Image 1 (cartoon, rainbow, N blue to C red):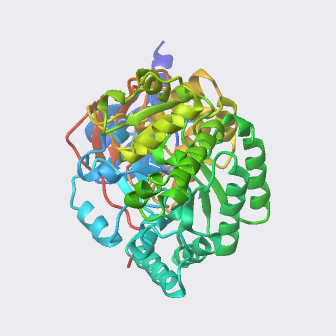
Image 2 (cartoon, rainbow, N blue to C red; image 1 turned 180 degrees about the vertical axis):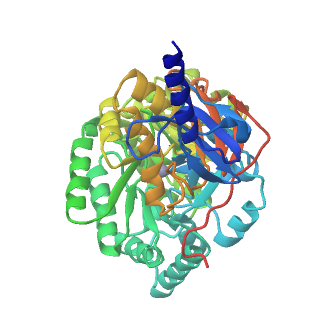
Length: 526
Ligand SMILES: [Zn+2]
């Protein structure tokens, strides 16, 4: 008996001598630590001082100011959102709808961007009490609009030079690269050569190129080919953002698009993808309207609708899109989300709207209503037009990262796509735990180290000594999205703790008043 006690005692002594006796401000104790690199989790502790991970290994908690008990919880690098609509950030600097998904860094300025001057915007944002880190791309649409307004033409040599110098200026002010939204105005008026030239300006300063493709429906294959060509000619790493296949005629085409990415990569073109985990998209109602009819802005558009011949051809264009593209061939697939001109329609389908006007829910009548919506000033809609098989195929693809495409939201404000509240927990709860489409370490990697590497941020996206303490701790058994298309304003569940630069922002599942977020600047900023 005595001998056994001795053995036990010496084992205990040996064990505790391995424990770090150093003082830590925060210790995360006993969690399943996943470094974010795709390997299985390891049961260990993390010590944090100030904004940095100081130690990973057994820690004696007597020497900690604060202990986070993480038994049974997964301790991961904070999630990185590769596609975020951050435009309401001055209204919601706490970014609660994102932080409650476990996101500690969001990349803004997608789809062609929405602000200028670039540096001024970042500087004023850096004075805000931010709930998460933010980084930005400079947008092609914004720059084109500054230089050429809504003109449907190619730029002159001077205009192109001006746009190039604006991209370079933004890169030097901290942009991480350039984004395009070639489906939107005025980007839709540009030819590929213009985008190649501007991407070269971003590439020169180490930037990336993120492409909302020119087409994601019938023209998807050409859209992917165009983005790959831009990557090849401008020698710039590219991301096919929110990659998806829109509309039944094209469903299944992700087999082809992923093969295109594979063969581009084999040729040395650096292509990656990001994706949100939903079978519906969200964008302006104007996506259904032929872009030529909107050249020159809203007044010009209304002028054209007053011309019988032009109006007929606009309606034909809308009908085509309702049948083959975002309309999905059925008015029930178009769910109105933002309708400031008639709030009773918010959240309702185009079919509902037609019936409430006493109209048959035909494509022809749908087009008449879409035109009416745009004349009223437009708005946004949710389009239920993505096939689950394409979604899962793209999610499994090894070079796909996660990007929510969500807009910062708060209960009571408009009708967002549920991705604004649920993208990351939905991947972990629905696609990992429930459907087992990918495993947990792979999913975490797609949200962390892959994204940090893409943004050239060596000190984020991995749990490693010396890295910033951006950490998300979640319960793998309960994590899930709660937001739905009919009740979008629902925070996710199962995110127990979030640390942003070492600041505990979510504590025992509760969103606190603590703010640790920063504006991150790209490496070209001096
Ligand atoms: Zn987009």
